[in-house]
Length: 82
Image 1 (cartoon, one colour):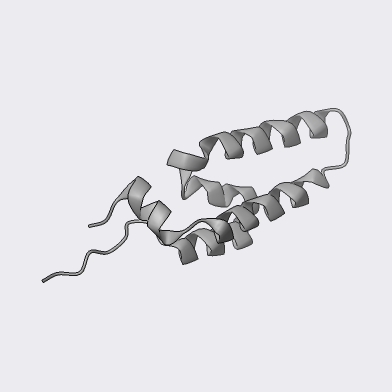
Image 2 (cartoon, rainbow, N blue to C red; image 1 turned 90 degrees about the vertical axis):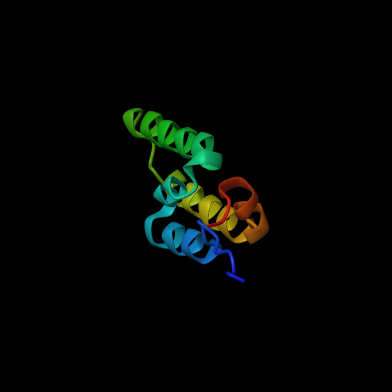
């Protein structure tokens, strides 16, 4: 019997968000697209208005915590296995 492998891995999700911040949400775009676009639009608006982009760090921490809290079973349910 062949063991089914997950299409998306939780470890990869966490690693990408640690390395790339909010851009790690592209890995789970199907379920996290709204978070990515809210972050990008907010940072863009703040940058245009001359506000310091310290919010970038806040959004990056949000992405990392979100990746850590995702369960592997949840990713399997959304993306499936092969």
